[in-house]
Amino acid sequence: MFKKFTITAALIVCALALYAVEGDHSFNLNVMSVEAQPAVVPGLPPGVMMRALHANPRTQMNSALLSYPAGYREPRHYHETCGHYMYILKGRIQTPEGVVTPGMFLYAAPDERHGPFVYLDESEVLFYTDGPLDFIVDDGK
Image (cartoon, rainbow, N blue to C red; front, top):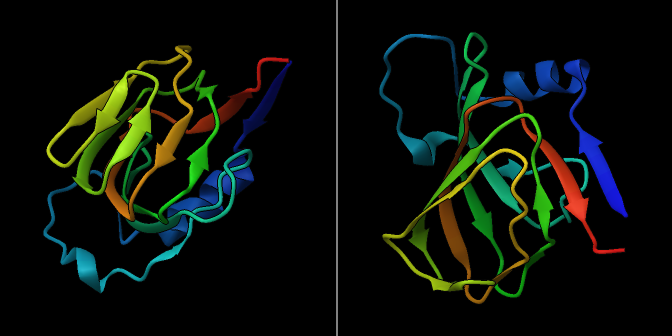
């Protein structure tokens, strides 16, 4: 059985207000000046912190710096409305394919199941989506 969680239009509008920069223009940003907030994505277990960096309403691309505590487990899941990209900055992450470490890049295509992921260390990831984020848990039932 799959648990489908999508961000509604109202939540997307609220989420966009959290981004340090919104729009379709060039900018520079000191990432450490952006306050970390809990990442609230329906279906994602609590514990992830997010520095929301940029939201582009025209393309619906979003980018953020995500921080995961050691031992955090992200369930197997997929996305229907976006692909997402992860560049590992810090930590080690156990994936079904092996351990990923700083300097590695992951891409998850729309409709492709991925995970579970276990964050073996405190980890930081540059994360961005190429569309509106939905999160569908594939719990295998």
